[in-house]
Image (cartoon, rainbow, N blue to C red; front, side):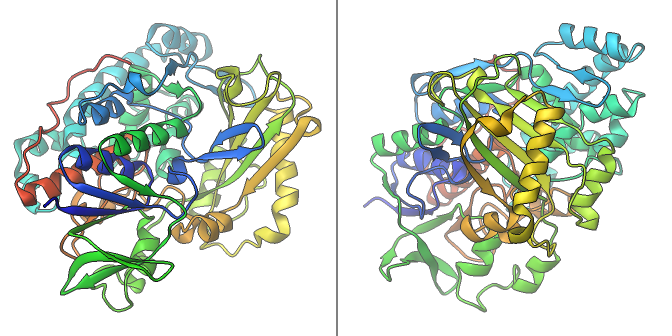
Length: 508
């Protein structure tokens, strides 16, 4: 008889695990409380307009390709990819920087904007390539046992960890002007951290973008979740949407089923948890069961910042503006400190704008646009009364988009909208502290110090998603699904191919 695996949540990590395990012969059942799959990677619709709820950058596209290859499929049979050029527009008060995939055009821009720093860009590519080639295989490993640190792969990677340095510190070895450094540090927002605190090893994130490019998926990145769900069903798995899980059933420290919100209890052999980690640890288990991740322990852990979101259906096309724009605050360091340390509402926020309709005409009616605006924000450990300030802050953000971003007349062309505040992330999406990027990625919460893929609290219980190893961001969340799936297959003696030694991959 097939072993039965229940997956709690149909986010990117849960869907990755489900399609891999179903292909390897397990009976897979997914329970998802929302009406659609995807979690934070689900579609958000306003009439005929389709938005991505969360992630909008697809980097390391070859990792996604590998997940489909795990099921003997080609991702191109399910999804259509567009390489973006420029990668994004970085807007400061006195200049704009719009890097392209590949080095030559970007090097020319640096020479024009910051003469004398172009050689630093070459050093950046060479050194960070070496860091990436040594460190990424470490992120593909399971750290359930401390023996993983004795693997020669990890030992060879030690000199590339950049211990004691932040991303911003590290970029000082390549570039002199602070504004140029900032152009290569904003990626720390993917981890919900300040570039002045985020470990230097994550400098490989901007390298990955420059080396491999950034992609858009037709229909939005949410189409990835739909494609994965299709594979799960093709492999015989079952997906139950609009079906919330109330709790995980545990007997003798072993996860053996779930209780649904309607009271129904379903037994299984193993449980994969794709819910937000903090929420799962505090809400999905009977009080008193947790030994390590107690409520007091959770309160002492570091969580990422949150986001203030605007999804705007607009009856205008902004064909002269790029797919991705980032508008930096005048004092970017102060802005970052406000959302990560002092927990103050930023008067001068930095904002990210996605103008996806300039690339993809399937997202909105002809002549219309989907404008997605993300404002990094303090999480709900701040007592900010969002219900009182949401309207005025919305106006502030739209004004910045119009005046600094070039989205002229935006306010007058909005025909539909949705707002998500940090409080909404917490209450409506079950995200602990509204921390949209999950646990912070400081060294004390990385590798074996992060909640383990084979959850240390209970047997036959596995974690996937941004709250476990390797961490936040779509590619690493996909890897979490593969790592956890492989770990369970190890337990049952099911053979599988391990990820190959990292080589420079061809772009999709």
